[in-house]
Image (cartoon, rainbow, N blue to C red):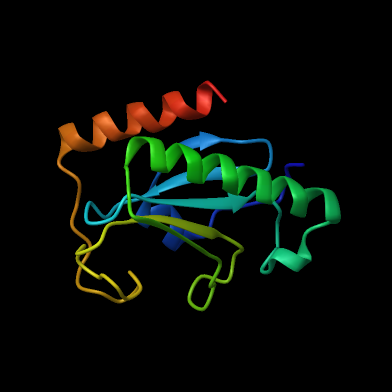
Length: 139
């Protein structure tokens, strides 16, 4: 499934930390401690929309979204999971999975464009990364 010409968009690379590699997608953690937030990026060069994927890859993407959403909810219990593929700024196909809690910094609105990202403290980031990575190793 991987494409030799695939390159992660520089904005995604700068704003995230790598968590895991699934058969189709790279799993990234958004560097914003206000919201537990994963991003899945299919390793398909030039792909901007879900409909650009072949049927089998599209089905696999949904399986990986479900896997990532379950992992995120396990390590960051929440009231609601927001899942979306916007791509208005970063054109490369990527899917956001955001764990939301009633009363969080953007509740009930979207997380995009709300305040400034708050960096994780080193120890909190390390603990979260270990938990997430263990979830992907066991699936």
